[in-house]
Length: 166
Length: 463
Image (cartoon, chains in turn orange, brown):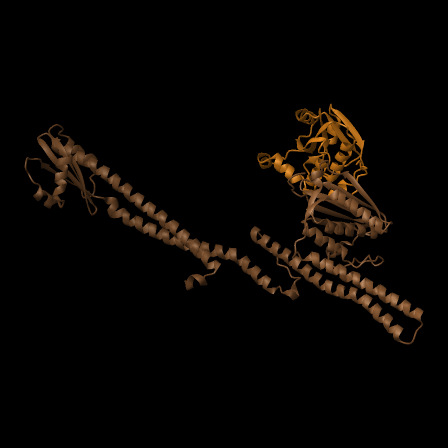
């Protein structure tokens, strides 16, 4: 049985630390992770014409983020089936509901108290819309990882208070 | 040959541009000329055909259409210098007189007789002949006319094209000279700027050029190279002054002690005390030179080190054990929370002794400069790298000094109360560089330092 779990993400290391925290507690057989980022479509007709999901994702994600995803992927390789990155291109409840349905999402986790870092002015916080959706939503208190040396970096993946279970 | 060699890239570009422009113009004008000319010939050819047929019909069928002659005179414009001739065909007749009169070869008549039609071109005149069945028998009808286009328009076309070629040539000269100048001007600027930079003025940088992507890249690459050269120059200078200082301190102590001891006769206890100090200082000197030697050995990859399969998690446990045996105050916490499920992801190709040395240097630095607070060592794996993170909550490194931390003998300004002589990190860096690893140090003063080491995962046949 594969459980598909949705996580709102701002493509920061911190959002992945939350993912790691959750995965650490799950006892499922197999998990498929969908990292979803909320975004408005641009008003510019040329932007719309040349819109590409792959390119947009590439622009939004940093090398560090990709590496951190690989870290998690390697850590939980027996638990995870896939880690997908998706963009939700619409800011309405109906749109998010349809997205959840089309992605086959069964559960979602929302970090309560975490303020997403939206660098892109088209991005928006997806968490409130997910919270209103019909699927099972787990809300977890999350104050974020304290990036010891300024902004959270790859290294901060390791230090989020999750104790080792080796 | 000599001429070619003397040409600069600038003149070459100009010439190449000019030649290609010119060749294009010539090709184009040639094509226009040839196609216009062939069209005018075909057109005239058809026109004369029609004229011939009309004239023959009017002349030879006049009985059937009495008004045809008049019609022809009235409505059909005659071609320039048009002449129509009609000769009756008689058996056995040669047309030598006629051909002489018309100025056409006899074979023309023969051709009309055998093929029923013939064409002959003489200067701008075109002759057309056909066999025509008139009312009173069969005739050879011949029409000749001057090709008006040939006589008038060709000259005009030639002149126009020539002027066009000249004008276009002048334009292409201007364009190619201007273009090649605008392309090579920034290059010349760069050359002049680079000329100013010598080993004494390494701080100078090239100005960023506006609007030229490739050249801006060149200048920034060049500036980046200058950055590195400047840093390594400084490192070199720092190294010599630091090294001589480090080696001189124990030597001064030894000389001072010996000097004082030799001033007058002393008790054996005093001698023992002096020799103890001297021994201590000499040992310190020995440690420094040994470390220096190690650094030199790892710095030059003249000889290849023996590489084998190393499991990084095992290595970290070893390092931790060794360090805690040396100093029981070290608190090292190995965090394996992101340890990959698959052990293949933990195996690297490396020299275990050297990696052990590098890691223990980094981790012991972390312990030392944080007053033996807890040091976190974490391990994880990405697609191609084993990532190790060593984090302490110690004194940190001032940001402006971060770029010097790999210099041998360099010690940050806030480390005076700690022992050490600045060989450990450069040594670790050299070792990691030998393993194609990446070493990143991030630090905030009074908060701590994070060292991230990424070792490439070894590609082995079997897990």
